[in-house]
Amino acid sequence: MSSTIKDVAKLAGVSISTVSKYINGGNVLEENRHQIESAIEALNYQVNTVARGMKTRRTMSVGVLIPSLADYYGISILSYIDQELYAHGYSTIICDYSQTDPTGASDKINFLINKQIDGIIMQPINVKQEDVDRAAKANVPIVFVDIEDPFIECDSVTIDNVDIAYRITKHLIDNGHTRIGFIGGAEGFNTTDDRVKGYRDALTEAKIPVSKQYIFLENVSEESGYMAMMRFMSLPEPPTAVFASGNDLTCGAVMYLNEKHLKVPEDISFVGFENQTIAHVYNPTLTIGIQPIRKIGQTAARMLLERMREEYDGSPRNVRLKAVIDFGASVKKI
Image (cartoon, rainbow, N blue to C red):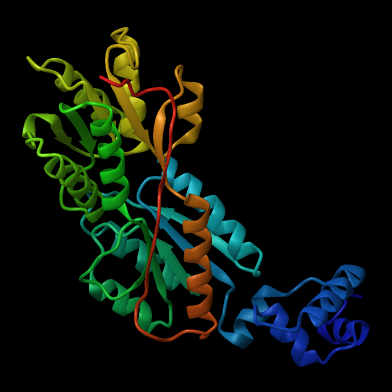
């Protein structure tokens, strides 16, 4: 016969309500938590999630919406979100959607609401206030990651994109570079716009003219990174340094450099972004901007947990974290 919640409570020496609170993700005393976990393990107690969901109207599942599951950022942050939610008894339903589809995000939000999930974490592209309001009406809180939308009232976790782009550009300027290429995503997204601002601010502060020929803004893809570097290197006066402000952009730009046998930093100085792996695989080691992806995922999950547990019901919060520069050997002083 299967063990029951009553059996767990008896073995743990606590009340049934305390065990129920623990199972449903509530906070219990540390001593009680250890006793309950030991009892669950000893009795091999299995939570009936279907029955629990019918009783509590909670499914202990969270939807995670990422525009591209092939993107390094999306895959990386998914892992940390899932780990944090799993530690609190939640499973994840993962969905992707097309950035170019104006109703893609709305359709997937509706899909997840119909699945009766308890909350959503997502990268918001083409999301509207009405989507968030519809979720709120269904008692499904949403937390944004990567992108903050100032026109939508929603919790969000981002990095200070202006700051990291400014510091990387200033690093290049401090090494004597004045012709600095910038590769970014499409205009109109605050992630891209803020990184362009940081780049421009550093140049303006150093009294270096901002030249449009050294700015390439397209979709975030390897193809865009490749095309950007090809365009830069075909200029009468190519940049002496390039900052690729995304992982796929970095990979594409490096592909072009390798294909054309251009050496870093002898022929051109280069700074990438996001992926520490490529930085250390490439020879010489690349200088690279690194997002605290683990902390972003964990913070977003914890903010959602607070909303789902009704531990916080205040105004929308934006947590803005700092990115760091991992200095390699890809920038030459001139």
